[in-house]
Length: 209
Image (tube, rainbow, N blue to C red; front, side):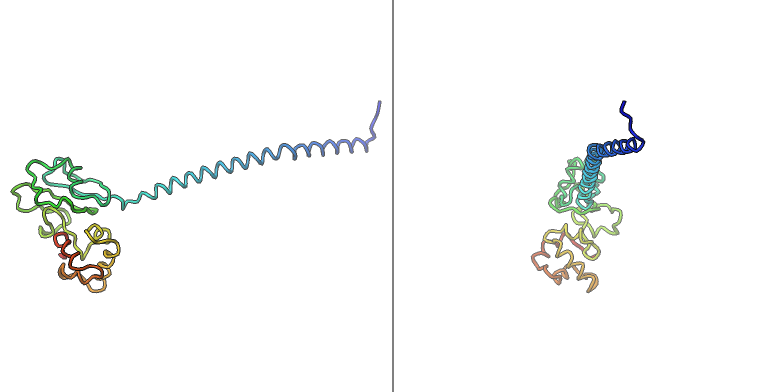
């Protein structure tokens, strides 16, 4: 029987170890690396998907909606959420519609709404609308619609006025910061970009008090 010397036995063992190590490096590690790469890729895709969902949610800003309080001669008075740019007739419809004795002739149903606006639908025979929270007199109301005070209104409120976009709204704010409050609505023509024609369309919608 062939017998290996101790030195040959050591060499044989070393050779077997090298073969086993080579097999591991050749076949086992690539599979582990592939699995690791696959797991990393899946994690990255999941993270990106989560990020995309968060980004999508972030593109639903609160300023795309407004909240309006409706009272008076409507079927269901209350607070309603509408899309920015909605008009009075839309919130009246959302409140269940006007009652039979509602005096819609005194309301500008086509007027744009702004966030936080109180809308009062008067009844036939009413002399004036009741006061709402945050108002000090009836003079700030016209046909049941809260007028916008051009001395205190923010940019988003000013933009709800017809003919007043982002640039003109900012011009109004810049003017009053530089010159102080408007003394009358006629002073509005002193603002860059606003002329007599624009002012005429705003007379019933704005106030300086």
